[in-house]
Image 1 (cartoon, rainbow over the protein chains, first blue to last red):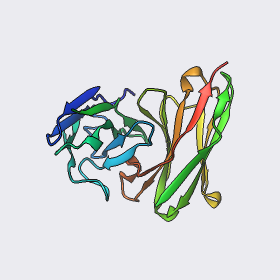
Image 2: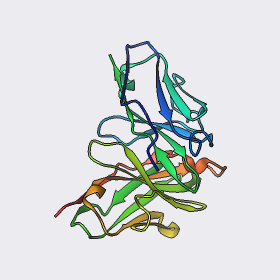
Image 3: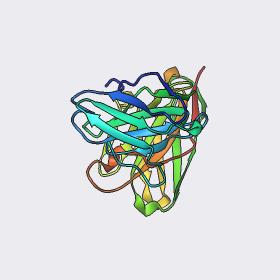
Image 4: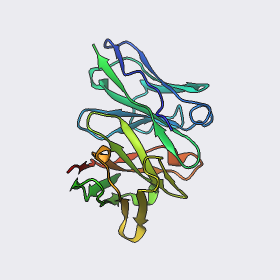
Length: 110
Length: 120
């Protein structure tokens, strides 16, 4: 199964909003509301930022939000801050007890 | 909180085997799902396998990797056989909370990863 498709890079200035897309198929993103987003800083383990498309774990700033339309999920970071600069990965349930990740997006805060 | 500590990585020759271990500690009663995820050098995350109400494997892991757990020891394992150069990666042990349908699709806790290098 191919990885979910994410743009390799995204950027924005402090205070701005940026949206990262995650495109799958009708067999994964389009068929289940089980999309998660992870943040990974260099040399660190990933951190769960969004799950079940729109839900935020405790401790994640409300500047992070998730949505989905059809086969594409999106992560929006509002009010960009320097510490948001990181790699972001989406994942989705893909049926048959499988998960699948996106290729990752490097977010740069200008 | 939950802590995950991996061990068992290292250098192995192509065709060889390795067993990774992951000890889980802390508030373990909240954990229903355990995963293995890997990240090749400079690359993205790749989900390999999960264990919970059921077991699943990525295509890249099917037939070569086996996930298992010893709940008495709070330990998760990944037996890796017929290793290839392209299996070189940082292997993360990870865990998920929740018992609802779909809870096995999110990963709440991650270990720091253990490096596996496959080379002759």
